[in-house]
Structures are given as C-alpha cells and as structure tokens.
Length: 138
Image 1: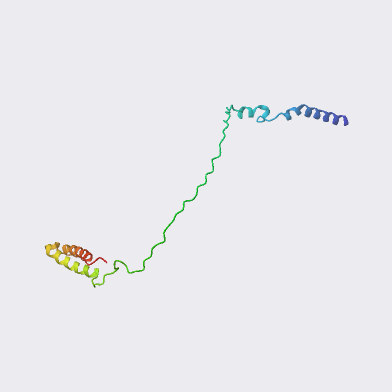
Image 2: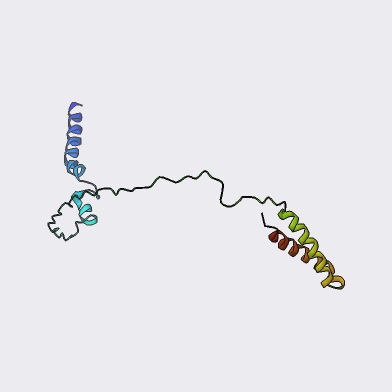
C-alpha cells in the first residue's frame, strides 16, 4: 500500500511539474504578449527646440504726483440777489383759476351744438395753463 501511495504522489508531482510553465504564462493582455505595444504604441513626436530669449527688465521710472491747488471757497451771507417768493399777493393758483374760467367761457362761445362740452373742457385746461404761467408759475 505504501508503494501505491508513493506512485500516486510521484505521478501528481510530475504532472504539476510539467504544467508549471503553463501557470507562468502571462495573460493575453499582459505586456509579454504585446498588448501595450499594439494599443499604446509610442508615437513619433517632433520636438523643436525653443529659441533662447533674454528679456530685459523694464526700467523703473518714478513720477512725481501732480500737485493741485484750490482756492478757498467764497461764502456770501448777504440777502439773495433775486427774491425767492413774490410779495405782491398774487399766487399761481389764482392765475390758473381765472385762466380756467376765461378759457371755459371762450371755449363755450367758439363751439356750437354737441361739441360745446368738449370746447369748454379744452378751453378751461388751456386757460388754466396760460393763467398759471402769466401769474408767475411758482
């Protein structure tokens, strides 16, 4: 029985010894089969040498800031040259009211029939504007 076991172990060892190079064979995508050489082949690239360029530094130039001179502002504390309001009692609203009445009368007398309402409205608006401006417009 011992010889039988020895014979089986020897046959198994010989079979493994014979197939060992098959286990060492790299796979189909490994570099030994040229996968990288076929798919990642080095390409020819032309390399042009760069010219040697010397860049001179720019000269440093210092400028003086311009000087600005301003005179002192002049203040006057006297009365204004032109009055800001009228003192004689007329207001622009009074002029507009009188102008609107006059424009309505004139507009009503110029137009006839069913156009009289439009003539009064337009005349009163135009008269109010003219009266406002004649009264001073303030």
